[in-house]
Image: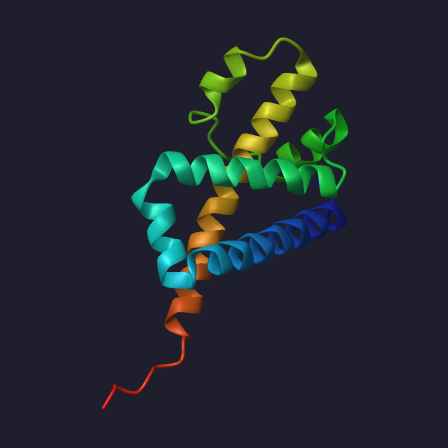
Length: 131
């Protein structure tokens, strides 16, 4: 992957992470509750993340074979073990690439989101004790 493409991917990941964190913080009323949600119910966290990734892929015009190839080129060392079961259901090369790209992007987005939520929780203003 060329350096300019890598930079574009990093911007994409950062933008997606910021949007996802904002969405989760608003929905769960803060970073602590959002992180607790992601950790407490992994199945629901994956469902929420995959739904968000689908929207990101549409918004950034990555919901095609070239878009999937762009994402996969940025993640050459990631393991596909977690995504492998979904690949079996793919009937075309496009579906297989799209499934793999979305799955790997969701995995890294979830990791980055948890890191960002932890940072936000650490920087929250401390409330004075109630009298």
